[in-house]
Image (cartoon, rainbow, N blue to C red; front, top):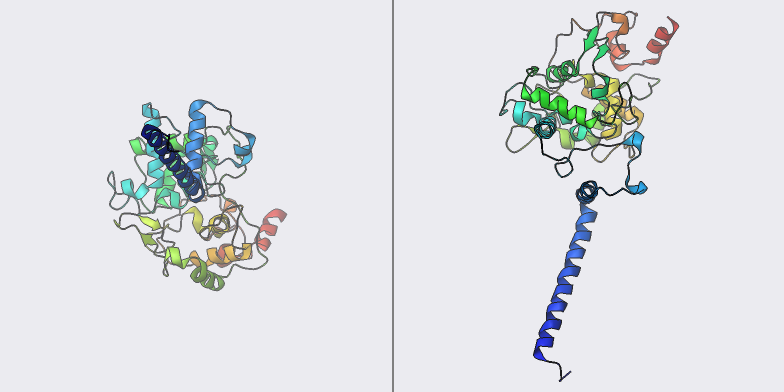
Length: 348
């Protein structure tokens, strides 16, 4: 040891320091990858895509359970069309920022974001996603008794779920949202509805859904995020919601899709409370129906729907407003039991 030159000691010391820094960095990366797996998975996938590497089978999502996501690290921004897609995603995720009561572009909606109903900017499996939206329009819709475009569909969401006014069909914002939905569904063939898209519809109960039971469930499982009075939780800037209101003046109106209890029940079964998904459902079917009954029994804005469902025989079983082509009451059409109504329609 005495014969080792000072320069050699310095070299060994530098090598030791380098090894310590390298090991520390690896440990930090491992810890972060465990805590934030989505972050690192996306970055690695982006590198794979950029390099053109084939993905291993275990890294690939099943085709019928695809979960597309738009990420600036994956989507190249080298054209005006790419920028429009990214703007469309931002509009879906942060609608209120641009088009809410204090919106920077226009003030035409209630402060909720599109992704409050279409989770993860419309990409979450069984989270009311947009996977099959672009491929199905234009299409005939019985509610309006006419063929609708995707622009009409988006406009309906603004007038119903966002309780506001429809955007200008020729505006940059409308074009951006359409471009984003087209990009999300780019691999879906016309007329096809992949498994995992849209919403799940639960089986009808043998009884009516119970708002009183739903009230107890709401307090236990929902109020911490959506407020004791369904008012939601606002962002610090008071421009949008962290968690959206489920009733009251700033929630969806009674013309929205989620005002139908079958839609609301399917939505919460696969996505609520916090931490639930279609593979990890926390609520039972009965709990989901009862929660829907409670939430949709609370006060909210009204939309004139006099021009909807010109053919009343085509109204959904759980559409809560008459007149109907059968003798069942509005109350039963809203809360059930629905099996007798369904049997009547089958027998006609």
